[in-house]
Amino acid sequence: MATDNSEITHDFPGFFKVHKDGRVDRYWNTGSVEAGVDTETGVQSRDVVISPETNVKARIFLPKINGPAKKLPLLVHYHGGGFCIGSPFGPAFKTFLSALATQANVIAVSIDYRLAPEHKLPTAYDDSLAGLQWIATHSDGKGPEPWINEHADLGRVILAGESAGATLAHYVAVQAGAAGMCGVAIKRLLIVHPYFGAREPDKFYQYMCPTSSGTDDDPKLNPAADPDLLTLKCDAVLVCVAEKDKLKGRGVTYYEAMKKCGWGGTVDFHETKGEDHCFHFFNPRSENIGPLLKKMVDFIQLD
Image (cartoon, rainbow, N blue to C red):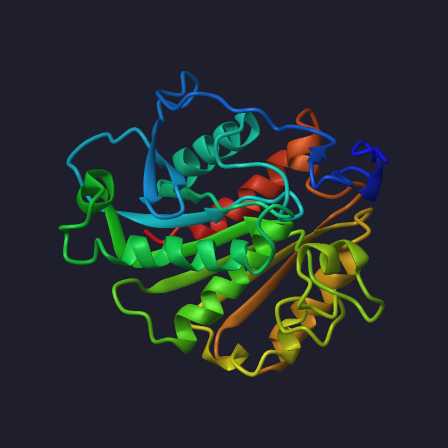
């Protein structure tokens, strides 16, 4: 008897649906734009393969350099999208990271990762950590990417991300500390509208990560439950939330946990009133983008 392979077995509106034959349809595609020179800022970008084995890539953003060449702080960015949508190559990230690189005078590297559900979690976590390890191979100035060798100061590294990317940035910062990673010195951790867990099981996350409870007893979803949290190696953390974001409470809980745990650095908090999750991408005309961007820039400037 014939089977209907178009039958939907799992449906997560706004993200993806899975057919009986395993085919995955995403509800939206962030698209991609070519690397090159950003006409508004003069920022140059290019794409590099950071892992031939997995074909994971990154996009590097180099701000316009005026005057004598000097090494710049390095911002390592992880994109959001619920672990299942997006890439560093979308137009929104090109605009955002070009602006951030220009205003903060940093070189930025946005690390891609393999997406769920085709690649079950923790694949995205592993790829994200591998991205920082790849950057660390440039510490002697002889790494595979000339822009990093020539322009990046690996003694001044910022990890950053929004939504699921913020979750990944936190994870990488802790793992780098726990492993005693050499070659990079993380100074700042920028956490924007993070996607952490709650007491009730997150069925969406559970589907993408079958080994997880999907609740706040999973250290990846609840940093306060992570025995390695105190190994976090950076000077300061900035947590940004949005008033109307359904994930706001998780961001607040994260901020409070970081204040109480005694990891040794400072923690700051910024709330944008009247806005929803990742509004600076979804609502590009919002008058609140400017103040949020300024807060980020002030935080990550290390000159």
